[in-house]
Image (cartoon, rainbow over all chains, first blue to last red; front, side, top):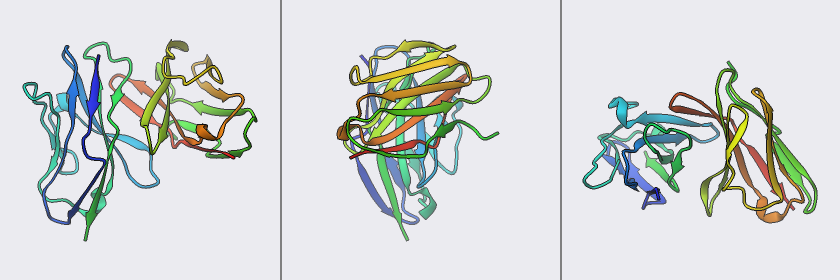
Length: 110
Length: 111
């Protein structure tokens, strides 16, 4: 069975500090991992996908198959990064559904 | 493009009443998903369709919940009878390729 775990429900940092949102997964196959973000009063939207290996809004995430992790990182947090972040997994090529973690609420203080 | 459209945006009803939530996916998307979001349980997948056919409804909490997709541009999620524990934000999402696009959600309050 597949599972996505985000151990931190809440995370607070000060502006300019580094931030790391943790995501661990369990799946025996080759997963595709995603980060979705929900800003206040906005729709849930895709932030980044591990296959793209791109940086979006200064965020990066590396898939570590050995540690089964897909942590989201940003070297210098900004106030506008405050949002709910969800890690999600799909079962490789059979995309079908996404399996979401419980989410981490990030607050960046001025 | 208005994206995924959901109606109503807010619904307040009394316990025992029937509630119908509506969703219009993005044109050309072949998958449609219904989610429920609560503080306690986070984001839960209720059911999803592929080309209008229900593929997995294992997340539907009980028989009080039902969902239909009569055509590629419309889906409904119905709760009958509603209960206070159904209070949540219900999201619809549609997908083409690997990205899911979410609607704005319907905030349901059952008194």
